[in-house]
Image (tube, rainbow, N blue to C red):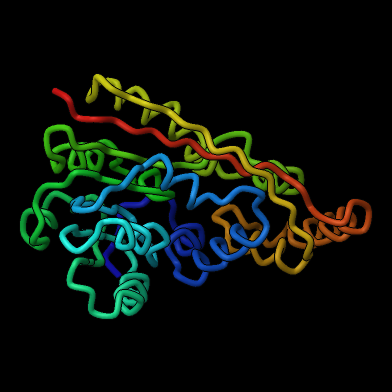
Length: 266
């Protein structure tokens, strides 16, 4: 795994990039969310056949695989993720599909990867979901994404935002690291001002969802896979989950997100 310049360190960083932790979060989110995030996102990305797509922080391909289903025979997807294991799993899922190229590299090296590794050099869509805020040099990565798009190309970035119910629950029993709170402010505090410098045409969409987690084991498995997991709070979180399920039949909390899209009309 390349040495990533990450806003997190130690165990927090490991859980942020680890394939097993990522898979746990994805599976449990899909199981209990009351709205389909993937469908919501793709309704707004409006991907067309023939598009050339850059996917930054692709993980195991939650969005990449949907891109491949939408771009037809003449489109392509160029993917980058810090975790080689995630890239390997993605390529295995693609089963030799020639429309995809994927590398394991720190996203701060995006410009070099486009210039020296990817066959495709320009894109109609540069996308990143649940990823860009992890970089300690966000501005550089965003600029590399902007430099990579065609005229009338677009950048779309999705990030979690407040209110974030799971963080709020965990905050009852432990202190949430400042870096986690910073990531929840990333959309409004960093992305929107930067997008309005780069683009004349900017759109913001809010994803609003409620989680209804009916299994204590799933709730705790998700908590253990988060960047803000605190071993000292585990017993209290477990007791909280048990009491909520006993009283209400589920642990209910908000899980919201922020999507910003800019179209290059300059």
